[in-house]
Image 1 (cartoon, rainbow, N blue to C red):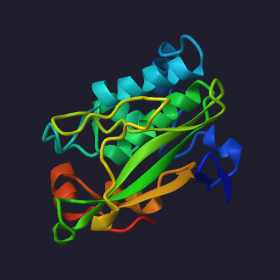
Image 2 (cartoon, one colour):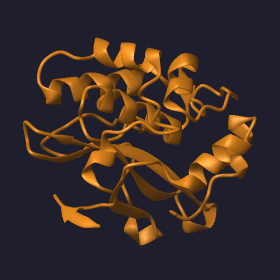
Image 3 (cartoon, rainbow, N blue to C red):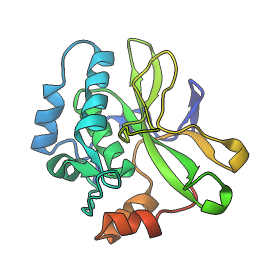
Length: 204
């Protein structure tokens, strides 16, 4: 793995531009929506894609929607997904516009104590030529207490990482989503049950 901009780059650079099973950027609707966001330089395109996924795609738990989505195209068609699925869509929309994009993970407590248990949270990183570095962004979806934003000057992610509680901000950028997270999505039929019972408590 190569280290750059404070991150470990897990895969070969060209893999952050390619289509795959879950980041299916060759699907026509993904292409159409991605190209509709193409105006300005890469930073502006990334900002539009980020706001589209953050604001137009609902987080399943926030809206209590039981549908389970995994592939970028599924998330786009159904307009809903948990953070893992939304990260797949944002990566796809960025890659459609030739912006290298990957997925990062954090280990967070479910509540405010270690005893509440842990879950794995997904967000994105994109390599933006205008600033010549990787920039992380969290399109989970805002709500009271969660106010993430696209910001080149200072990361404004959805959740603060509290190391004193055992939370982990893994500074690794993956070209593909973790197989463990996608396996859970593929095996689930109820997003709300999954969110309460099936989220992994380790990254990997």
